[in-house]
Every structure is written in C-alpha cells, then in structure tokens.
Length: 402
Image 1 (cartoon, rainbow, N blue to C red):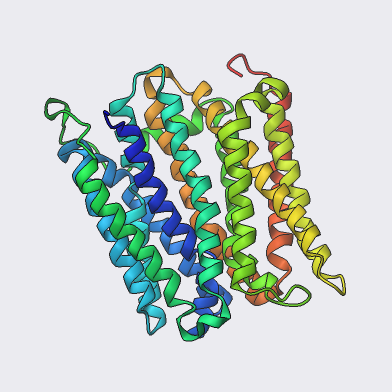
Image 2 (image 1 turned 90 degrees about the horizontal axis):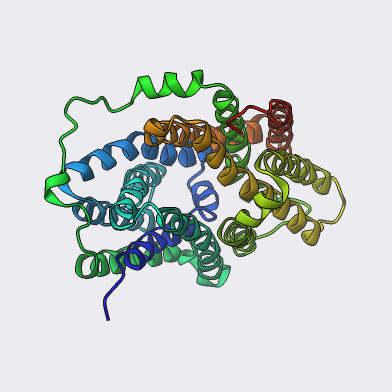
C-alpha cells in the first residue's frame, strides 16, 4: 500500500507537539524547584517563543535551499537534545538552555507547512494545512495527560525528570520514523538560495499594517494572544495555591481540556460556525467568551472553597473563545491580503502572534510576582476588553472585502 506523505508529516508534527505538551504544564513547578520567581518563569516560557520567532523564517528559507527532509530531521534531533537536557538539569541555566534549543527546534512548523504545500494541490491544501492545527490540539490533549500521570508525587525525585525523558524518547522515535518513512517533497529544480532576501521582510510588514482593516485584525490577534499565553506562566502557580491546591497531575488535566476544545472547534466545527454566524460575529463572540473566562479566575479564588468544576467551565470558555478567534482571524487576514502577497502577509500575521506568545508569559510572571496571583487575570481581562472593542469596530466596518 502506498504511504501518504501527508500522514507521515502529520505524525511527525504530532509527536513533536506531544513532547512540547508534556513539558509545558510541568515547567513552572520544575523551575520553582531551582528557586525561580514568577518573573523568571515567565522569561523561561518567553524565550521559547522568541527563538521560534527568530528561527521560523530561517528554517523555512533553509528548507527552500536544501529541501524539507534534512531540516525536519535536524530540528527533530534538536528537540531530542533539548528534552534530554531538560531531564538532566541540575540548575536553572540548564532549563533555559533546554527551552532555547526547544524553541529553535520547534520552529520547524513552517517547514512542515511548506512540506504540505509541496505535496498538495490548490484544491486540497486547506485540508492539508488543517492537519497542522489538529496536531496542535492533539498534542495539548495527550502531552499534558502524560505529564500529569508521570509527574505524580509517588515518582519521588524523578517526578520532574521522568516526563522529560518520555518527551526525549518520543523525539528519538520521531527522528527514526521520519528518517525511514519521510520522503523529500521539494524537487531539486525548485530549490533557491534566497540570497537577495533579508531575514525579516520589512516591506511585507509595512504593507500588512497599511492594508485597510488588516492592521486592526493584526492588533486584535496580538492582544488576544498576549492575554491567552500569559496563562502558561501564571495558571500552574495559580491553581497550586489556595483554594485549589492542585498538583502537577491536576494541572495536566486542565491543559488537556484546552487541547480537546481546540481539536473539536478548529478541527470539526469551525467551518459550520463561520457559515452560521459569519466570521466577524464569531471573532466578537470569541473575544467576549475569553473576557468572561479570565475574570472568572479571580472570582473563584476569592471563594473559601475552590470550585474545580467552575474552574473547568472558565477554562473551557477561554479555549472555545480562542479556538473561534484564531482560525477566523487568519481567514479574514487572507481575504484582506492581496492575492499575490498571501504568503508574506500571513507570515507577518504569524510573526506578531509569535511576539505575543513571547510577551504573554513574561507579563503574567511579572504580574504574579509584584501584584499577587490574581493580577495576571485582571490584566488579561483588560486586554480582552480592548479586543472586544476592536472586534466591535470590525463589525461596524462592513468593508467590501469582508
């Protein structure tokens, strides 16, 4: 039976993201074990996104020159080394080194997307790209669950290292399977050097910000992503305190919940929702749900007894709201971009999202350290109020291209 290259690249991305999902819920607890403050934890999470922001265009252009397969193999190998360092860390600087290497390696998502473009036709490309989104969601389901199970207290001193070893093992399996099963997708005659192009396309940035309504959409995505990504630093610290007092195992279930809603909404329902409610309305509804989700956290923490079911509802509101907003914003961006500049413009939009994922955890960590464990959610609530306002402005502006 002929092997589908799409299936192989999906498995490659899926294993990569499961490994990522294993480490994320555990990282704040692990860093605290080395005396890290909330600010340092925020920086530890932010450095991953910074490296992804820098290396995403670089890996993409190297893959244009040398092919997709070697770059994917190099980056998967880099992930293996990163998680091995994570597992054997004996000081905070080793955790930083691990996250820097992991950020560099996980920037290979752009190469995976390029691979899909190589092996799909125009008609089925959207479906192929949707596999990347599904892999993200599934990674956030299985990764945190694995982390929760294998970081339980009964593993003793190994409770932080063991999930990292599992992530490293998955990356090793990923490397071996990709080496034997993943064919090259880019023909030799299509490879280029890109020697005349800068790493960051300033012209594309200027064009995106000057395009009517696109600047508003980019700002909306940026603010919402800053607000959402702040939970990566603050939420694990938030739920281990009164009144919830959860462990790393409990943390894993909440991140898995986010993954489940991401898969269901983005993988199965987003097409139907946009047909039923229209994209602009869906963006507004998503921003509103995220507002409610964020303000719910400090309300629950003020109660004498933590309501885990209520907490799960507010986490679900965040996950559903974000899942409604993100793919819809990318669709609106695509509609507003000039047909000849789709790749460049969407690349700018993704770059702003990466910058937001870098800033969010840092803001959450600073707010936690200097203003208490509720402050990150008040900050996120205010940010999302701005997002709701921008979404309302988009609703009023019935441009011909929307």
